[in-house]
Image (cartoon, rainbow over all chains, first blue to last red; front, side):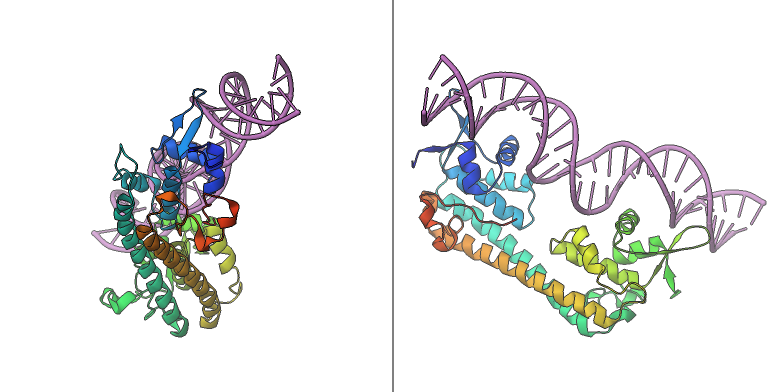
Length: 146
Length: 146
DNA sequence: CCTTGAGTTCAAGTTCGCTTCAGGTCCGAG
DNA sequence: CTCGGACCTGAAGCGAACTTGAACTCAAGG
């Protein structure tokens, strides 16, 4: 036990990600493995951290392609240091904060909407955020970017 | 102007959702329309609210199928009252709170991870939340439900 | 040595949430 | 009455993120 490298099955068990998904991530260049003589994958333990990072990022709604380019910021040759990860994490933290703020706003708008009797659709915070669309005539537009 | 019903184009403009998406929502039973003599859709203004609800829910990561079953809770025959919507909104607010809490935890874990030197993978909050997996041997599991 | 479970590749299939296309109809301004 | 833009349907296509299947190899215990 406590071996240097993990098989795909072990990495799958420990990360909670299916082997098929791990192979898929590898094809996309998100994780890497060495091969045994018999062509089987062996993962360095640091790959576990990459997988964790991938799953966390997905939770925030980031695409695998974006995650890949973020992970590309990590040093290619050497094993990433804590500082390398810290840089990555700080950037992602901002994303999380953004996302949290968006959801908070959504929640507050929804709360505001509960009491406003806005079947009239005239003053509902959700339909007419910040009253900024009042000038565009009756019936406001939904402004959920995406 | 201020007509009783909206064409699909008008609903699309006001909701920011493409006509093709609106037809798709209709096929899934998320919104409803009456038809003119010439078979064109006409939307009651309250459908605008449904569409808003759909988009907001999507932001929170809810699938269209789940949204549909939530909307099914609205009265079938009559136009939903503000109270009807309030009940729906309160339930969704809980979801938002949950989601916000999850992201907050993720962010805090990420912060904690920055300083912890956890390339050892032994004590990282992300890999080993609450140290609850310490008993399962070295190398913790990722616990991101989904 | 043999078996068995874990691993390999590559191609194709699946689900979700739409968009696009083809081929036609409707309707309102001029 | 005619023209053009908005609308109709049904089927097909698309991108993301995987999963599944077939056919095969590897590796470790008995």
